[in-house]
Image (tube, rainbow, N blue to C red; front, side, top):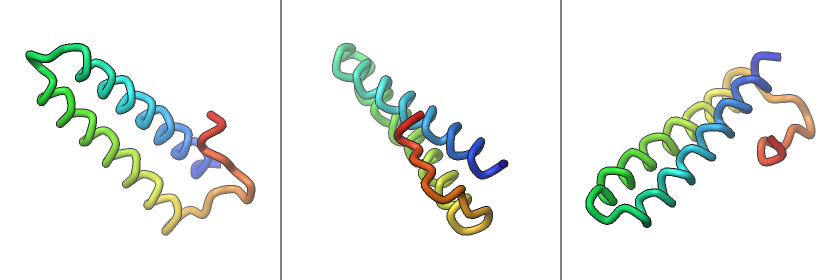
Amino acid sequence: MPATEILKEASKLHKVSDSLDVLAELNAPISEALSILSGSVRNSATLLEILVALKLKPLPGYDPASN
């Protein structure tokens, strides 16, 4: 189902955002830039989740955190 696949991609984006946050903490010279990128990636993931909620209706019981 397309909704499930999109939610899986959103979950991947959340993980990328988390990884960028960790890198930001470890790399002071580029910390601000990595934090900005992390926020952008997180916002994109959230927009995908909203799109699914409004237009596609995910499968009942689907938990994106389990991916």
